[in-house]
Every structure is written in C-alpha cells, then in structure tokens.
Image (cartoon, rainbow, N blue to C red; front, top):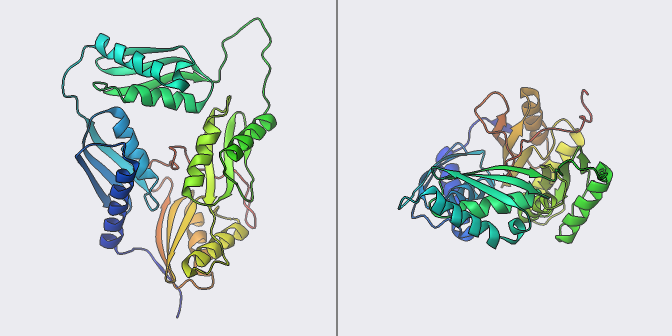
Length: 334
C-alpha cells in the first residue's frame, strides 16, 4: 500500500472527540463549577463560551483545555458573572484575606490595588510559582473581574550590600534538582538556563510528568521564565503497535534534525498518523510530513500542523510560553 499525505482529516469525528476530551478533562479537574460553559471545536481550535463565577475559573478552563492533546489553541470568550456589586474597598478586604491565607503568597509583602473590580498586584516574590499562587488567590475572590500581576520575580531592590549573583550553570543545577525532587526523570536531557530563562529539553514519560517538570522549574528562585520544549517519549519497541510507531516517528524526526519532536506531535491509529503542533516555516512543515511518511509502518499522514506567521495563532506551549527552536539544526542548513 502506498503512503499518502492527506491535507485534511474527518473534521466532525476529530472535533467531536476533542470536545468530549475537553469536557472530561474539565470534569476531572473539578475546579470549574459553571453550569453554563460550552465547548466548540473546529479544526482543533477550541472556543469556550458561557459564564463563570471568578477569573480563576476562567483561566483554569483555558489552562485545562490547552493541555488536552490535539488542541491547537483556545479562543476564550468566557464571561465572569458578578451576582452582586461589591465596592472596591470590600473587594480589597477579600483579596488581602485571600493573599494572607495562601502560604506561598503570605511570605511576601504583596500590595493589592483595586479599581472597578480590577485587581493589580505589586511587590516582589522569589519564584514564578509564588507569583502564580498570588494571582490564583486573588482570582478566586467573588466579585473580582480580573487580576493583573505587576509583581517582580526574583528581583532584589538596590542595596548597599553586595548581592551574590547566581550564574546560569548553578541555576540549571537547581532546576534539575527541583525536577528530580518532584519524581520526574528527563531522558536525553539537553536542558539549559540562559539569562535566567530555563529551557527544558528532553523526553518524559507522560503528559503529567511534562507539566510537573514545568511547575517544578517555576518554583526555583531566580528563574525568570520557563520555555517548555519537552516531549512525551514513546517506546519504539513497545508491544502496542501505535505506541511503537509513534516512537519510531519521534526517533526519525530527532535523527533528521530539521524539525524538533517538541514542535511536532504525532498520534498514530492503525497506521494513520495525525501530526499536530507548530513549526517556523513551510520548509519545516514539509520536512515533518516527509520524514513521517517515510517511517516504516506509516500508511497515511494527516496534516494538522500550524505554520507560525501564516495562520492566526497564539504561538504558545501548554503553559502559555512561545514555542521556538533554540538549537541549531542537525543534518540540514545552519
């Protein structure tokens, strides 16, 4: 049977399945209580409609949807419903109480400013995880419309005393130790830290491990941002034919070097492979299709790849960070 590259896939079946997976993920997460949340999917693009009670539920719904495999991007059209009007001073009391009750936020002096229900947080925290904890604490307060962070992460105010600088190599060691302490192993680890930005590269066992590795990196003091380029590994020697095929595809993409497996995600079903993800150019797009089609066992390749700059997109990974290639290509032009 000859191999073929299909430019479309059965939208109704794929999108209906993806919508069901998102609703199941939201139910499993359990933190979005709205009865008026609707999910529409078209060509892998998710639209969230309806009302929620707090900004936290709105951001949580978006986060959960983004983590469902096969989702290209999420168009958030949710509205925060405010049952009764609260004056800004009343909301301030609630936000301050929420910050004081959150252990990661309470260890720092965080100022909250409120205008017409919109909260702005100012101050300094040590880690991205502490910033996220403060944001979520404020977002959960009923009556709050939105929360904006103006927090400084890991930036110490000027002082007459010399401040020891943590070099990138030391910070990389701390990031890797935090990930290991979380029980996560990164295989073929090529992670590094540059100017306080942690770039995570390698293979992990599953999507849960991927997310917890990112969260662990967030918690390291001094880390300014986390770029997630981790890939869920598949075993090419697995007895499961689909898993083995995905493993061979990931290995072929890695060996070819033109497109990182962190950018292109293959899903196989009985020899039919759906490629999702985001690439930088039409050349990368064509390379991904060509390499995949040449893997033994692939009968058909369905194209679900976004080319950055050619289609509307948010250009983000599953934690809202832009995906980009940071290593020189191997086996191709530099």
